[in-house]
Image (tube, rainbow, N blue to C red; front, top):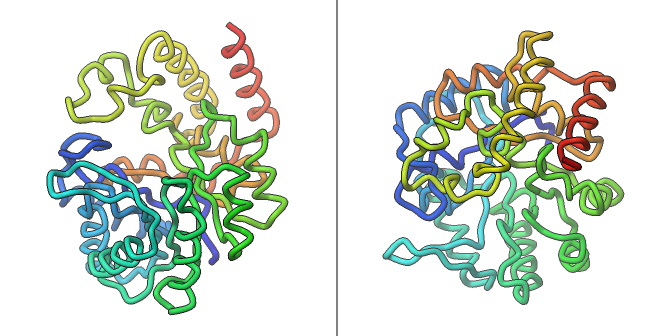
Length: 310
C-alpha cells in the first residue's frame, strides 16, 4: 500500500454513549469531514469496530458511498460489546470471525485493506487470534494484517506465525516510550508504523484550553486522562505555545507541527489524524506536506527534555 503521510482517524466520529466516547457527534458533520479529507488528498481511513460500538464503521461507509474517491479502509478487532453496551475482549478465532463479518457488512465492502488486532488482550489468546487473521487473509477477506498496542515480545510471538504488515502505537511528543524498543524493532523488521494520537487526542491542536477541558462533555473519556489534568495540563499547554510559535513561522497550526514531529521519526510510515468537521480537517491537512527542519525538531526535543526534568 502506498499511503499518504496522514490518514483520517475515525475514533471520535463514533459518537457518544459508550466507554471511550468523545461526547456527542453530528453524523452529517462526520461525513463532511471524511469527504473533505479525501478531496484534500488523504487516501486512507482508520476506524475500529468498537468506535461507537459499530457506528464509526457505518458512518465511514456512508461517507465513501457519496464520493468518487476509493480510500484504503483499515479497521480493528478484539474489542466487543454486550447488549448493555459494556465492553469485553476476545481473540478467540470464532469471535474474530464474527467480528470480521460484522465489519465487512457495516463498511459495505467485500475485502478490508488492513485488519488489525486492536489490543493484545487476552494476551494468552494472541497466537489463536493471529492465526485467525492469517487465515482470513488467505481467504481473501482482508488484504493485510496488522497489530495495535503490541509490545516487542508480543510482536515476536505473532511474527512466528505470519508476517506483521503494520503496527499502530500511541506515539507523540508526550508519549515517547515507543522510541526505546518498539519503533526500532518495527524498523528493523520491515513493519510499517501508523501512529495514533499524534496530537494527544486534541491536546496539542492549539484549540485546547484549561476552560475547554473543564467544559468537556460528561461522557468524554478525556476528562479522566492524566495529560488533561493538573499539573500536567498546564505544562502541556506551555508546550503548545512553542508549537504555535514554530507553526506561525510557516503559517500552520500547532497540531500540524505536532503531527510533523512524529513523522520526523524514520520508523513512522504515517500518522492518524482525527477530524470531527470539515473545518478541522482543513486546518490539519497541511500535515500532508509540512515537515520540521532538524533545528526545529531539536528545539522541540530540548523543550521536552527540560519539561520532563522540571
